[in-house]
Length: 56
Image 1: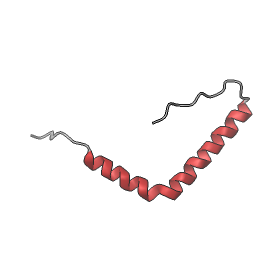
Image 2: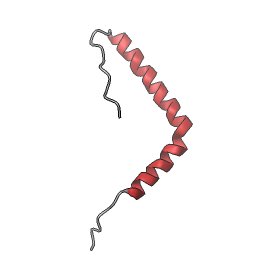
Image 3: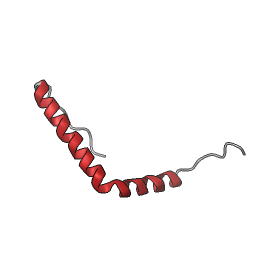
Image 4: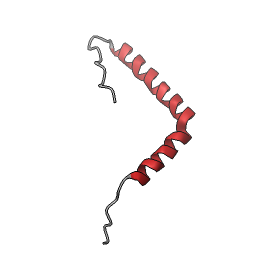
């Protein structure tokens, strides 16, 4: 993953809120578009993890 970008410290509260709202809307649109693929990949990722046998 890429490093996190720096966030300017000179934004007004209104500017920061506008960016937050934009990112939240984008997140929702990506989820709506790719929900099934995300869920399928999550299942694959969970199956790939090794889980110790707790009752061995």
